[in-house]
Length: 386
Ligand code: GLA
Image (cartoon, rainbow, N blue to C red; front, side):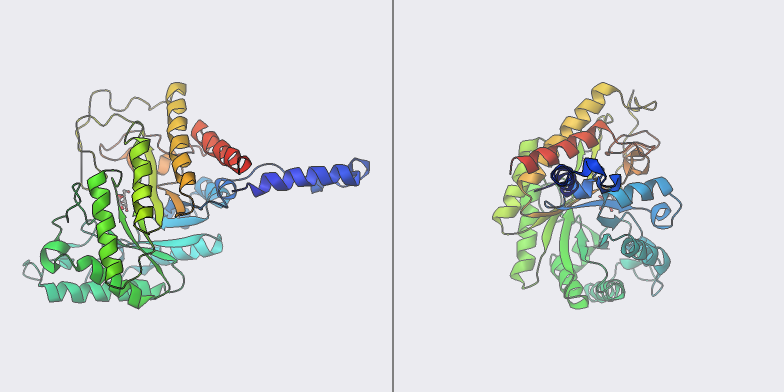
């Protein structure tokens, strides 16, 4: 890996000396050492962020400044999910998703689609008929095919990769009892990949889930991906959401996820990275958006800002995570943060609404945090050691 902006600076400075630029070469040849995340990690993987309508709609100018400097990949936080994009039978809400794709193209950002088949943020009519009765397997497969063909078809050639199926697994690696699984059966995942592949044969297709550092769940994801591959449909990677906490799961477990994915012959993406710094209490260890936890005593301690001791802890956590990602850079193609700055993180509302979390590398004002410095320093160190 290398950090091109820095190398270029050193090169310019040396060639300046060689050319005697102190005697009259214009000062404009000096390139400032000010790379963004995407520059520092250019030779390792893409650096992505989840985008919301304030960003691709142009109103969040602070967010857009950060996006332009630091990110070269994007995932829509919500607007391509089944509920927002296909709220009623035959009725699609294209404007927000179109704006998202157009924003990425205007800003030179690789576009990811998220997500086609999920049990959550999906309208009830996907699963039940007009009388409220569960649909048949045939009806649900017909709807799945129509939905995927329509959405993937609209953005064919513009969306580079799709999270085809989201969160199909239980924590023990068995299939989640979702309406898709209950009605269609275990092959709903293969069907979804088949339809997506037919709709855009060039698109990269991913399986996406959380808590893949849990060995049983990780093994389930690998089994699922193999079953799709065995059915003859290309799987571009297993996507690990990486919603982590400040002290769990262990780095060893996170590392072992990528080892298992590698051993099965797949690539991976880190798709929803953030680090929750707030107390979770006794709530479930989950990134399931339906989960809600009771407010815990002293559960919102950092409303006035993150104290130095916690900034240091967060920086160490991010450095440890990126060390693992760099170790596996040959199979990790993208590391995407779930949000841009702390103010735009879903963790301010999950699993307890109305808290002040500090989960990302940029604070609410768009300033870099010590965690950012640690991640940037690691890139530099890693480029020097190669
Ligand atoms: C899951 C989903 C995402 C998003 C997050 C919370 O991880 O995959 O789309 O809903 O939950 O923002």
